[in-house]
Amino acid sequence: MTAVLNDTRTADHPRWARPALLALLLGTAVLYLWDLGSSGYANSFYAAAAQAGSQDWTAWLFGSLDSGNAITVDKPPASLWVMGLSVRLFGLSSWSLLVPQALEGVAAVALLYATVRRRFGAGAGLVAGAVLALTPVAVLMFRFDNPDALLVLLLVAGAYCVQRATETASGRWLALAGVAIGFAFLTKMMQAFLVLPGFGLAYLLAAPTSLRRRLIHLAGAVAALVVSIGWFVLLVELWPASSRPYIGGSTNNSLWQLALGYNGLGRIFGGAGPGGGGNTAFGGATGITRLFGASMGTEVSWLLPAALIVLVAGLWFSRRAPRTDPTRAALLLWGGWLLVTGLVFSFMSGTIHPYYTVALAPSIAALVAIGGRALWRGRAHTPVRITLAATVLVTGLWDFALLARDLSWLPALRWAVLVTCVIAAALIALRADLLRRAAIAVVLACALAGTSGFGIATAAVPHSGSIPTSGPSSSGGMGMRSSAELTAVLKATTSTWAAATTGDNSAAELELSSGKAVIAIGGWDGSDPAPTLAQFQRWVAEDKISYYVSGGRDRGSSEIASWVAAHYTAKTVGGSTVYDLR
Image (cartoon, rainbow, N blue to C red):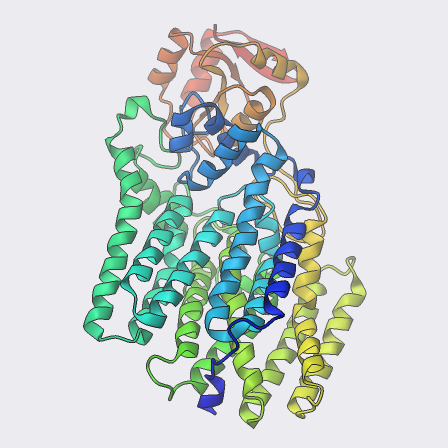
C-alpha cells in the first residue's frame, strides 16, 4: 500500500496539460481582473503610499505615506515598490494599483501548479492551482492593494525552490528559497517566517545527501535569508534619520523594533501598544476553532478539514517509506506551513484580521491536491478508500455548515453540495468507480463547489477599507472623506505638506483626493511619537505645512492639536474644521 500511495511516476508533459494550464491561468486572470475598478482605491492607506512613491523616490524606497516623507506606513515597503512603479508609469487609478496585485495572484497560481506538478503530475498541479485561485480570501486579496498578495507569491516561490532543492539536494535552490522568504519579510515582516519550520523539516529529512551536507545547505539558506533582509535594514539604520521618514508603527524610529514589536511579538502575545491587544475581535476568540469561526471560517476553511485529514493519513500511510520519499517530503513541506501558520493565527493574542488567512490558502490547496491524489491512487485498499470517502463527506458537511451562515445567498447551493458529497462518498466507499474519469470529476466538483461559489461571489462585488472580508456582500472603508471645497483648498497649496491631520486613514483620503502630501500625525492610529510637537512647530515656522485639519483619532497627538487650537483660528471648510497655519 505504501508503494501505491507514493508512486509519483507520471507523464512529464501529457498533451492536455498545457491547454489545461492555459485555461486555468486565463480563468484566474478573468476572475481577478473582472470589474476590478469597482473597488476604487480599495485600501486608501496603501493607495496613498503608492501615490507618494510615484511622486518621490525617497518615499518609494522607504514606503512613506506622504511624498514629503514625514512617516512611513506600518509595514515594510516591498509591495509598495511594485504598486508605486505602476502608478509612476500609468498614473494613479484603480487599475494601476490593483492590476499588479491580480497579476501576482495569477503568478502564484502558476508557481503552485509548477511546484505540485513536478512530482505529482499535471492533474494534481491543476487541482492545487484551481483551489488556490478560487479560495475566497485569495480572490479578495488578489483584487486588493494590501501587502498580502505579494507575500503569498513570494511564499509560494520559496516553496517551489525548496521542492527543487529537496529533489537533488541543491544548496543553490535552497539559498534561493531563503532569498524569497527574505523579500517576503520585506513585504510583511515576521509573518513570512511561519513557513520556515515546514521548509526546513522537509529538506532536512528528505534531501538525498548526507546529514552534514543537509545542515550546511540549511546554514547557507539562512545566510541568504539574512542578506536578503539585512541590506534594507542596514540602509534604514545607516540613513540619517533627519532625511528619511519616521518608521511608522515603531516606538523608536527603528525597523528592527517594528519587526520585533508591532509586527512581531506584539501580534502574537498581545499586550499594550500598537499591534497588541484590543483588536482580536476582528478574528474571533483565540483557540483551536478560530479558523473555523464566524470571522475566518468562510475566508479559507472550506477545504481545511480535508487538508488536515489527508495530511494525517498521508503521513501515516507513508510511515515506512524511504527517508527521501517525495510524497512524505511534500506533506512535511506543506503540512508544516499549514500547521505552524494555522496554530499561530489561532492562538495569537494581538491584532489579527480575517484576511491574514490568505497565507494558508497555498498550503491547503497543495495538501488537498497531493493527498487527494495519493488516496485516490490507493483506493483499492480499504483503509485508504474509507479515508478518501470520509474526506469527501466531511468536506460536504463543513461546506453545508459554512453556506448556512448566510441563508440569503444561494440557499439551494448548500443542499446541492451536501447531497452530491454524500453520494460521492458512498460511491467511493463502495468502490463504485467503473467510470473513472467521471468519478474524479464528481469528487472534484463536490470538493470545490462551496469555496468556488463563495470565491466567485467575492469577485462580483466591490471591497474596500482597512478590514475587507470575502463573500457576496461589499465591505466598506473608513477614514475622512474630503469635500470638494477642502480638496480645492489643498490643491492650491505649494508647501511641502498641504496639511496635517491625525491618523493614516484620514491623511490618506486627503492625499488621494488632492494629490498633495499630508502628514499623518501619530501614524496609523495616532499613537506613534511622530512628529513631535517641536518638530511640528519647526515645520510650521518654516512654512512647510499649510493647514491643520481636525478630526481622526488624537490619541498620540493631543499636544499638537492643543497647540494648534491655542495659536490659530478654526474655520469650517466643506464640513471639516481647518486651521490655516501659513
